[in-house]
Length: 295
Image: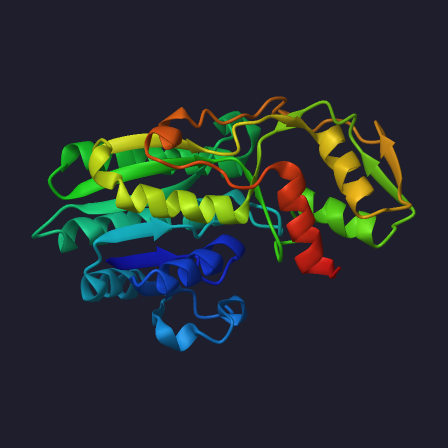
């Protein structure tokens, strides 16, 4: 299968690119001019790579690639001083360009577009809002031209794994505990999250690609472990697995405005497609800690 993948320099995108390559797919990567390919482990030459900076270059690459499927993982979380306009550009405008390019390229068969969405409700953050807005555009465009476009919105829960960004809560906690940081200030930790290990997310993408013919023109699929874990329990588990001496100060920080207090995926749809997570939280954390910090 010919697959066009965005975000191939990032944590999820690079791992997915390598996974798809190993599975025998023809993978094309759409990257920004400044993006590093370090995460591709020296295999970047095995991909068709385009470094684009203009709308025309993006549309031309989609036409040149003529993909059977597009997987859109590129995004901005708004963690590195990005403005709301930056988030709109990365999370909405880029995707719209891809969709327009896909519709033009889909002359002989329908193209499947898988968007890596967010399980968070739009009111939580500008990131969540922009992801939901793009999903709504994808729905409208797919329903308007079902013969050319299938849009699958993956509502992804809290992913973690080795090599992830330190700006993420899960990675920050692991590094702080492993380094025996004297004190780690936290909220009370009563909010719950559905933590899913990277490899399980990769297998979910593979299942969605293989089973897309069983899904609707527009479809939403939850991807997570199916279990809700209190953040306090997550932190205490990391603390124990790293044998950390860090003092955990729960309640030292307030909850964020619009804090999501409960997140849990309904994985019944994915189960019906033949997918199941292979890693529980302990197994995933142990593998992450081992790969990031050694035995």
